[in-house]
Image 1 (cartoon, rainbow, N blue to C red):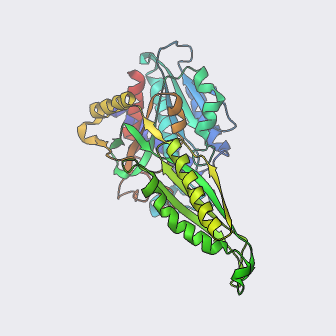
Image 2: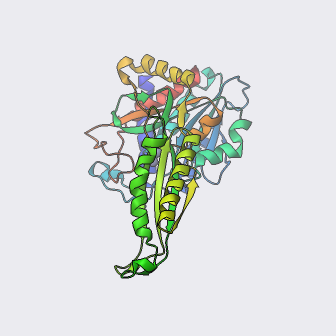
Image 3: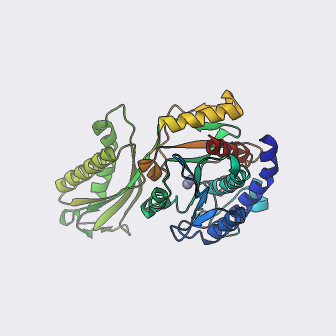
Length: 388
Ligand SMILES: [Zn+2]
Ligand SMILES: [Zn+2]
């Protein structure tokens, strides 16, 4: 295996650097899709196009197996202007767009996996479905649209696996956890309605800025007073806008925020409490408040059985020391969760952090980079899954 992966590695690096130089935004991954199709059709995969961008490819389409494994890679980039010395040789050629979440590496790795699987096709007894998913970074989420297209149900998928590069874990490691892994990232817009007027005559107006100040302070207590202390939840107001000049009381103030939880019911309860709190305060001042709740992705919750399978493979291939058991989930979101709503499955983190390649910056940072050697660790895990 190590010989095989060493031979394949330069190709995966070439895929990764090509994709990195040609990043495309969510739902607009046309060139990326064309590139993936070119590689997969050369390899002889059955190709499906359930959405405008992205690809679903099948190995052993004729095989009627009780297990049908789906491996997912997301393919979209972010609206970020890229920076970084270690990436000088292959920086984004598309101004203002960059692969700063590692999806270029997810895609390159899965193209490498496609080649590995093809080389071992005679030994693989299952049907294998490769999902090159668009638009992970933008609601409603490519994962949701792939699920709604019905393609995976039609192909008879029974389990789904995926990974994300991790700047928090050293290259050479895999980090995972059974149960809740990543949170629901729900969003809301809270509008405080007052009555505009002259800054010198506040008694003739209803000042939404004063109300908003009270609301922001008070909703800091929502999590501590409405959520079971053993459950995780976060409320953050990330944006607040109201008024334009120093001497006018504005009509309204608009706030944007996010609620992070692991349960939809809890997220709804929290947003309801925020709305009631804001209304109560606003009414006390003669104003009003309105909350618009925009559901995000569900939480990523790993099935214990499939997570055990990954654990076993990592230990077998790389030894106990390569496996990092995560004690806590993280509050970031991932649309891989849509697959897990219907199929058992596991999402895990691929260690891609290293000082040499300056792969130390967090996800979505302009200098984000992932150590390419991580792909040498990742690709064989999927081959082993397919052979199981
Ligand atoms: Zn991201
Ligand atoms: Zn990502």
